Length: 182
Image (cartoon, rainbow, N blue to C red; front, side, top):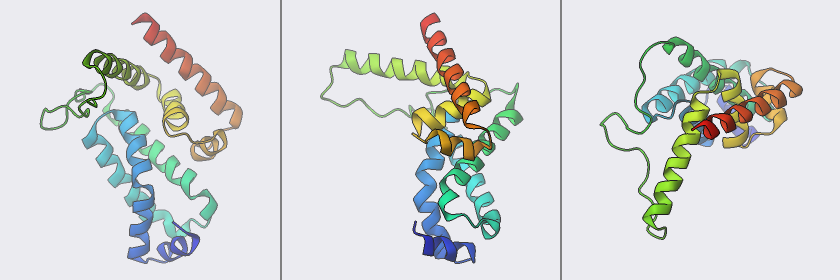
């Protein structure tokens, strides 16, 4: 998305807003999916995020800060949804709404044993990340899975750089301990 399209989207141009959605929908979906590990939840968060972006975009003027701003809205939407669900049952980590596996079939160039070990390892990491406290989980997802810079994370979450680094270190350590303890 270029700055001209951004300005047009701010002024209500629907085609320009559609290009903004296209430019950022994968990022938003991936953050939400890593947070909830479920396709339908990630899609719901995407809708929520882009509705909020649409509503607040006319007042947002910082083109350079667009990505961190969208990440902040996404992170906050994930945290809000997680808090809303506290104590309520959630869907399986591995099944979509129809009860079929969400994971892709392993590539045929890998031996089945290796593919199974990799799948189990990734599932364990995803489960450990999902069990992190929200503050740590958001930082780990944004840095380690979405490759945002420390500065972008700080801007997105409205926290200091030191806090980002601290939460990342603590979150990573907790993931290591959960994986070690099995």
